[in-house]
Length: 125
Length: 167
Image (cartoon, rainbow over all chains, first blue to last red; front, side, top):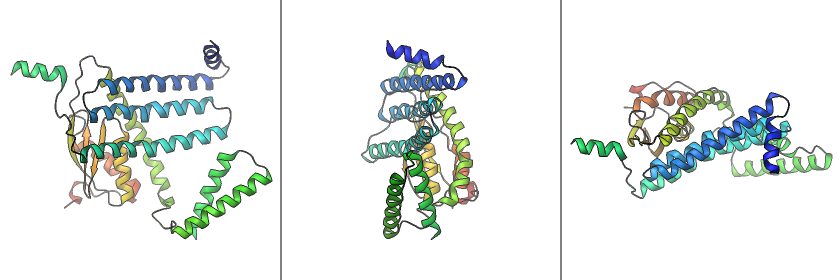
């Protein structure tokens, strides 16, 4: 309950800064949840990696940007920028490391249409 | 010497930003730790053109807005793909030729491809990269030409010579 009051307090605070920050944080949170759904829905390892990279970029970066709008001082903004820079540098590097390891180990990706599309094509054939 | 100065400046800015307490005792501790770091980096030989790419900062800053726009566009595509009730993805693997020469430019290009959702770099070779894409239509080699040109400009400092540059 206290948490909900805090959230309402942030959104209704005077000035546009808090509203924009809360909006960006909400976008980041929702896109992270969507990306998690994608990790569960997609069929194989490589496609799931694509869903996970949504968390890396849109999710994390909009959350950090939103937090920067909500931050009480410029010092915090500087630290958030550093965290964002770190994420932008390490996120793709780790994703590439995982993908490269899977490819080197011989994991074959699914190529071409999948799911209902494929079933439809097979029916026609 | 220029690189040592650059490293010291960058470390000072980092320390001032991270600390937030500007009292004489704490500041002197910061000065000591920066001095130790610079001495260690010098002894390790980490002070040449490649380890301190300060001359690349402005081209890289010019590259960033383009990358952010690309990331946003790609994010929308992937989110749409996730939310569709009938999944219509068409995974594919393509070989993308690159005109980037230096390691830095290749890293920028490969990381940009991986950073945009929907495409992941699987392997980096001398003149090409193996890319796994979520949609066959979006992951044609031509789609990466613009990004290749721009990351080559950001990393190598000169526009790439286009398609004919490799062999």
